[in-house]
Length: 166
Length: 109
Image (cartoon, rainbow over all chains, first blue to last red; front, side):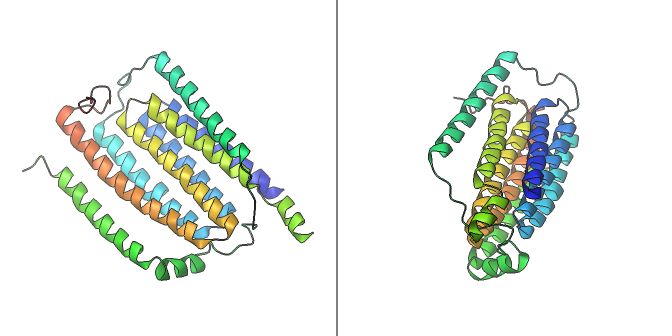
């Protein structure tokens, strides 16, 4: 039962902080709430016994991407109040559309039957050893290609940033 | 009987489906509501993360390591995308001094 309680606690933290991302006006607070959501999701990965993914998630999202976001927010100086005015009509319409999407997703899942095959807490596939074995034997080529992707992304970002200097 | 006991103790897979659908829906509402391009990026991140968690959950319940490797690759691509996207946003802000998407509607037609 402890697992179910942990799952519900982490879900409540993740969903409420994800909603706070949308509700808060200040972009810096929004980024910090997003970090809280990512930590809750890392807890979910640990609950699934996927330690490798949990660690990568914390390093990539809570570390790198959040620093990038915060840096961009400070660089763009978005802290002025009332910079993005919006009508209530758009908000209401968007919430109704999102709610309908949620109902459709749940309704389409409800008709299908989900079978739970293995208990994730006893399966060992998410451990670093086993996942690394799969990554470096079966998926070695995509792994190496992703390094090329990263290099091109890095070069592209630097080129975009340098554009004004000429 | 053993399987029945373990199935009572574990979290049903439908819980993960409902939670990830809720997180995905919050991301969709964020994309629709927000006018700040940076906030739209954050909402896209929320959607990516909900999909990631669901793939990882399915992989863990099916005892299949390939799914979790795919989640790793999705994270890699998302990180590259965020780096490029934020660089683009900085360039757009430099040239037009705003990141309000209602003003940046040159690609609308």
